[in-house]
Length: 210
Image 1 (cartoon, rainbow, N blue to C red):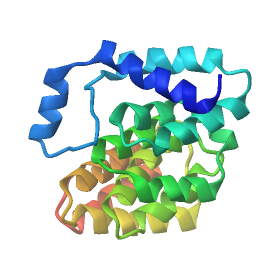
Image 2: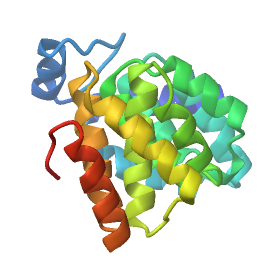
Image 3: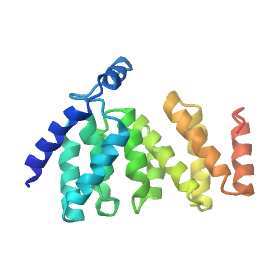
Image 4: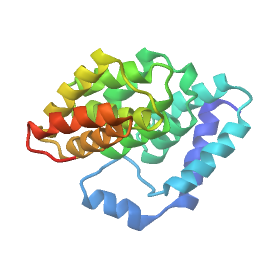
């Protein structure tokens, strides 16, 4: 089946997942998409698993993900993040997707479903937390949280850069970024006693307790 036909079939199947209450709740919070069926994440994960099995190769998955992302439909974008093979995604394509993220929900899904699994995830995360764009910062701190949770401790230069950007984000205007940054600090502290003391000491300079 050609990608265009597959996209049509996928979009038709969203009608069966429609949850008007979820979609309305998002609209009430100011989250707007051209189309939003309100499909739940567990349903979308099931669909992504089925699509992965239907694809003959990772290359096919890649092209289907690219096509899904181009659709201005909430469910298509989330599916794209679930389906894209992380090891096949070039940094340039990641940059394009980051520029096109339409909402906090999609930013968080991209971070959790895809960005954290990129072979160059740490490099991108540090680049993003230094950005002045809210969704970049949000993704950066979420990815670092996951990396810290997996026991990936940065080197001395990375630690210094992280602490600097952490303090900046915690004093910034975005509530979602402040929350993501604080969560990352909690996970950084779990890397060991030295990391814990370091981040506690840094946070005290801005009157924040871990």
